[in-house]
Image 1 (tube, rainbow, N blue to C red):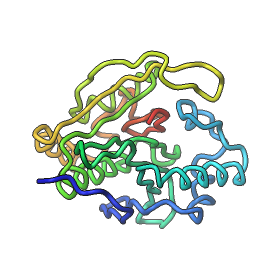
Image 2: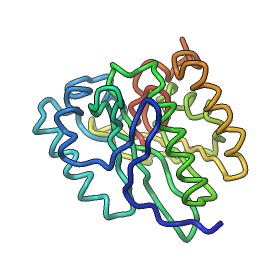
Image 3: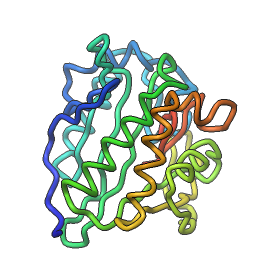
Image 4: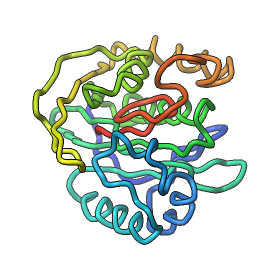
Length: 227
């Protein structure tokens, strides 16, 4: 199957709905994670201390969306409120690949099924609807939680790009890269579905780094600072 260019669309799950990100999501997003240093620890934006600062960040992200990115707000179906963000990045139809990243979630949904289901939605859409051959993640070399979370998806660690990205505090991060190929997706999909059936992240990763605190560029409860 040839890869198809993704376009903004709603991805619907049982617990979470991924809606194309807009500025209308900002008030909910600020309530979910604004001013929380742990949420923003690994992200490549300064922590927003006001709703106006978060609005500026989101406006910049939306302006960059034309550069081959698709941005979503993660909305709890039960409440209709946005509790985090996630994205497709580095999209190449020619090369049949994309990246999942730019992910963060507010504390109220850490150790819940939200991020697990969101990853299932994103990966299903990428491999089964868009026909990509490769999905990748990248994360901060110091973010052990995120690395463990990505590995639990069934992704393969590929290597490290040294001094790869400048962080808001002036430090430099190395980026650890992971990937999943199309033929690796079916068993990974089955594992994610079993995890959700068992109760989501809390059941799958209780006590495991990445399940209950912010991450970086990748999975579990996270706040993906990397991607």
